Amino acid sequence: MVWDILSVCGWPIAGSREDVPIAPRITLVEEQSGVDGSFLLAMLMTNHLKRSVSNRVLLFAAHHTAAHYTAACQKLTFNTASALQSGHLRIVDMLAELYGSVATGGRTTGAELLQLISDRLAEVGPSNTLVIVDDLTFYSTMHPVVGSGENAVIDFVEQQLLLHTTAPDCHFVLKVNVSECYERLCTFLRDLADVIVELGPLPSGSFHELDEQSTLPLLSALRESSKTLLYKVHDRLVRTYVPGEVGIKNL
Image (cartoon, rainbow, N blue to C red; front, top):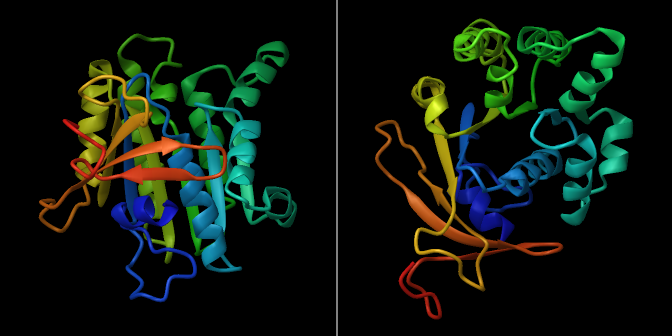
């Protein structure tokens, strides 16, 4: 079931014998309030690392702690400890950086946290790296001047992130909350993205077989094609459904 979600997102699957698609340069994950897309990020991380021994992942975790993502990858039967020890997987716990800096007078603003991301990006190897930022809207709320956060994040994406997209095999996954207060930021990121993944609750309300609905518009050059999946996160797998299949009604 993991493969269904990854293929819909346009990502090549580790171990697949089918024609391998080119991974999208920029994937935007739009998450509605009350929906947690960390399972999808964990899938992308572990899949990218399994595809090649030369692949690397750099995760900037602000929505959840580093421990949360470590546990999520382990639930997908991935040896997270080995990847961390070898340096193939690097997790920058932005919440730990923030809370630790409060006592020491260190990084406490959005601008300082964004600078930390820039410093870590400068250490990224020349290729085969997947950079995940979870999530960008966090940094827009950390600016002291009301309304300046979105501008600062947009400038950061233009001046820092995009500089790295010219590197071969360097890919970005950017996650944002799609609340109306971040509308301008989301619109800006949509224009950059090759693939947009929308995660939202079931429009018909709760259903005992499903946790959430994952609407995954898979964008072509004209951004016209799309697919929708329903999913339920279990202990060691993610079960997917197609709206209208047997046993799934009015979804």
